[in-house]
Length: 152
Image 1 (cartoon, rainbow, N blue to C red):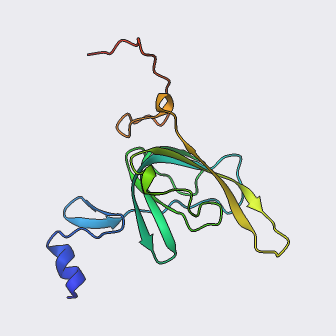
Image 2 (cartoon, one colour):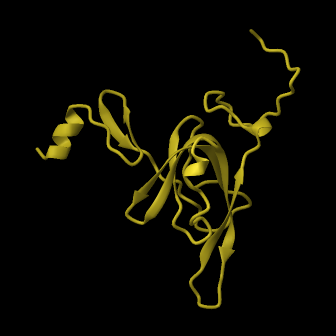
């Protein structure tokens, strides 16, 4: 048994986006898998929990509040990692964004003159009025009025 297996067996949590699940097992937080071609829409939004350095650069762990059109489903309340090493994502999300709800949208592929195509992204800070709680569960953003009556 390796030291890592020994630590996992004792309940250690792996840093860099892993979380404990179920009967003491550890499941790594999945990365967002962007579609191979530009669909009509492919996006994920969530609250930035942490930034961390991985093998290919900086990554952000989000607590998902909404998503659509992605290659893999990410449920509301789950965690997902977004790799930020792409040229159109690099240095756009910083430590200042931890705790904010961000919307990452894959817009298209760009075909530059040198032939090395890349994905074009847009990142938006989700306005407070359109933010969803990870615990609300239905995946649809709702506008709330100041005078809305609460059911409790």
